[in-house]
Each structure stands twice: as structure tokens, then as C-alpha cells.
Length: 460
Image 1: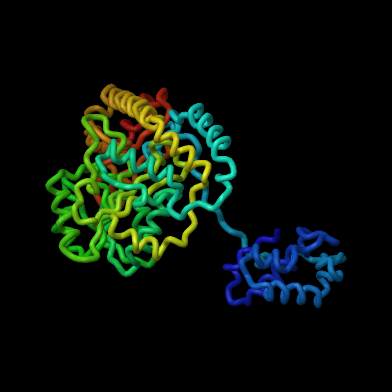
Image 2: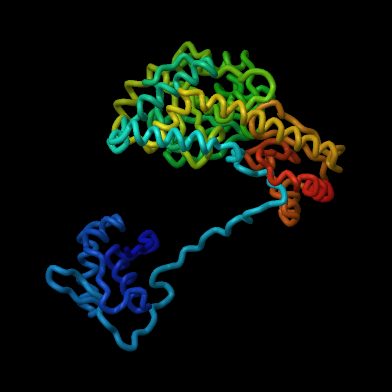
């Protein structure tokens, strides 16, 4: 199918630009003599233009002799003699960004989610059962908020392990956090002011901004965002990660959480989005109770995904809405189709309800705890030991590493890159102190850690 970047047409009309693009392909030999062009309707659908635009372009090409029409068969490319190649500007090339190296000696900027422990055998067995038992149901249209078995399985998991008294009807299943951010801003309104943690996870702010909402920064102290800061910001909606903030690692204590809930309840239209992105990975003590579990005013929207606990490519996330918002959600967004395939939903539902997820998480907590302890031991044994300080190692898939160095963050990152080490600094996330590395797990090949840490020490 012919594909062209119609956004690059400049001041040309759509049909004129399309005519030039097809003409250029004919002159260049990309479209060969006698080759049949796509039907007008098929090309219009593919390029997302009107049929009349394609019809006008084809008529112009026929008038100029580049194509000929055969009744009830379509348009075909004319054989041309002595054709000159088209000018370079006929249809512009698109510059693709350079790819990052595939392998680093040490990578402190990974995505924070490994796939080493994915339960392939169990997952495959469950998928076979789903295929045989659900059958034709897998081919039917899905409920807009996800299949009932998965929503009820998620609700059961949240009741048992997160202390959240929620029902399946409150849950919306979607293809990852970014999709759910889009739903949230459409549900709560683009005219609201959204407060985002600073430093913080950049994607949420980008999604809200692209949807036309205004975002304001919420500076952190050692307990996270304060109610006083929220009040002064003018925000109506706060996007927070109170159980383990990224990238600072701050855990918001109970008194601060209660004050934030009182802030939300003080005026109509105020809400808190609780992004609980890696709460399952706490290495000391029990998981911190959620804001949602202590919310008496229906002001918390709880969000989580299975990206870190299972695999990023599954693209399964979920949103728990307060009961008071359910009528608004159904009215405004109930027409959306569910974005997660039925097979994955039914498989995950069984994985959750039959205890597979709990067993998997127990194994993965042991795995990541051992991996982190090995990294900390390698740090203690390296030349970095006297020139760094570790913070926030009790929970989550990242921690902070303060460095004693003469270089600014940007310079040190460039020097490390040349040595095959990729660094991520707190200052890259919209603020925060300098010389503070954000270390994500997994962080590279275990056998390379000692060498890489010595290289990094030599760069300081």
C-alpha cells in the first residue's frame, strides 16, 4: 500500500501533494510500468483522506499520462521512456533518532522491570485452558471496562494484599498506565489543574499536557507532597506515588496521607490519583497501606499495572474508581472499547484467582532482594565505597546513590557513557539535588558489576 507523510505537504493541497508523491514513485521506478494502483477507496482509508482527494489525484496523473485507466479494473502505471528522477523534495525523508547501544557494561537507567522470572510454563498452561474452556467467547466484543472475571480477580487481590475494600464494578482495565492517564484526564476534565510531583515521573505530566490540561509542580520534602503545598499550588487534582515516590524514593507517612485526604475533601472537584506503580516490591516489613484504603470521602483514584510484576509488553493496567465517579465514567467514557485482548485478560484472571500471581511475587521479591544485596556488596567492595551513600533500599525497584564528585551531572553522565556505563541522575526529573544517581533494577550483567563500578569510581 502506498504510504506518504501528508503532514509534510506544507502549503500544498492534499490532492496536489499526493499527485506529486505518486508521480515521484513512478519516475523513480518504485512503481513499475503496468503495476496496478490501489483502489481509490482503499488508498483513502489507508491515508485517512477523502475518496475525492484520491480521485482527483488519480485524474491528474491520468491527464498528465503517468497512469491509465481500465474500465472496472482500476488505474495502472504507464511505461515512460527517458524518465528523469524526481527532485529530492518530492517527498521528504524522515530522520529517525539514533538508537541507543543494545548492551551496556552497567546500566543504571533501565526500565526497572525485568523478565527473568516470568512464569512461562504456568502462563502457557493457563492460556491453553482459556482457549479450550472459553472458546468462542474470546472472539466476542469485550465490556468497555474489561472482562468480569479479571476485574473480580483484581478486586480480590486488592482486598487480600492491599487492604482495599473494592468491587469489580469499580475497576477499569486498560492497556498500561499511559492509556489510563488519558482516561483520567477525560473523566476529571481538561479544565482542571493537575499537580505533579517534582522531581517526578515525566510521562503523567506529558499525557495530561497533551490532553490540554494545565500542570503545576508540587515540590517534595522528606515526607513527599504536603497539603500546604497542594493548597498553595492551586491544583484541583494531585498525581502522587505515596508508597514509593519515583525518583526520590520518599514514602509518605500516615499523618501526611491523612492531611492530603482532608485537603481533597475540603472542596468539591478535588481528587488524588494514587499511582501505586511498584508497591509489591517491599523488602523490609509489610507493604504500606494505600491512600485509597483510608479514603472516607471517595476522592482517590487508584492506579497500578502488571508491567513490573509480570512483563512490560503485556500492557495490562487497571484503574480503581471511587463509587461516586462511576456514573460519570459510564456516561462520558463507557463508549470506549477495552484495549486489552480477551486472551490475556482471561489468562491473567486465572493466574490471580488460582494463586499463581502470589507465588510468582514471593519468588520475585526473593530474586530482587538477592540481586540488590549483591549490588550493595559490590559497592562496598569497590573503590566507590568511600565516595557514595546509599538511600532508600528498603522498597521498590530503584534506590538513590549520592556521589562525591567534582563533575556536574551532565558531564559525569557523558564521561560514563564513553566508558560503557549509563547513568540516570535525580536532577533529570524536573529538579532535585545534584550528584545523586537513580539506580534501577535490573542493572546489567552480574559478572560486569565489579569492573563497571571501578570504572565509575575512576571517573569521579
